[in-house]
Length: 58
Image (tube, rainbow, N blue to C red; front, side, top):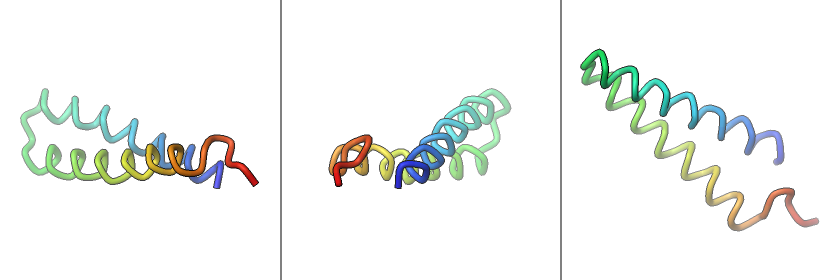
């Protein structure tokens, strides 16, 4: 689970970077998909760290 949280955190980070670039280019479809992926993957990452801790307790 440790590696999965790190990977999903990186996906959320890259989607936020893509969101900033899509705002610069004014691409509406890219804004929608980047925002949705940032919310989903970022929420999963934050909630996993809150409920299981990092590193997770065994």
